[in-house]
Image (cartoon, rainbow, N blue to C red; front, side, top):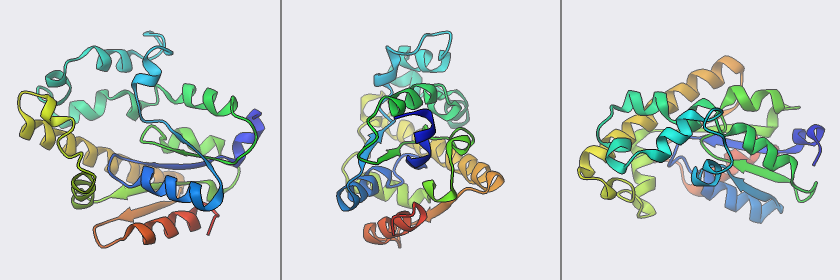
Length: 208
């Protein structure tokens, strides 16, 4: 894939629990797309120098309480590497290394609007999912992952509350940034079924 070919890549951004992975899998099956997930931070630690990704390396060095219990949601948001684009150059490198087919669909919370926008050649190549707190909590509960992170801390209830509050702050950041850049978003609440969300994303990405 050449740099010019990135214009054919489709992007689904949004916070954790927004439905990105589920919708991506469905669209891949329906339209023959290759899905690339940008979320597992451990995939990038060994590839990014500490000078280039200081927040990533600081996060990797923390224990679970340092990550999720001892800091405020605001500090968590302000120091989380993916929310500041530290791994995005590696995402682009990975995309450039892929063959030209099948078409690529990228999903993840590291797809920040201000970083994706310069890569877009047309508006129907990117969308951001903006979940309500109730939807995010319901999504975690439905897939049994509500306590996956929090249970590994000394104060699970506080860790979960911090994590959900951090993600809510990030969603508001995305709302402001997409609005300023004129990029597509979908509000995701508990009244929206997976089928409906998939259809809305397909339309936003020119697949519907």
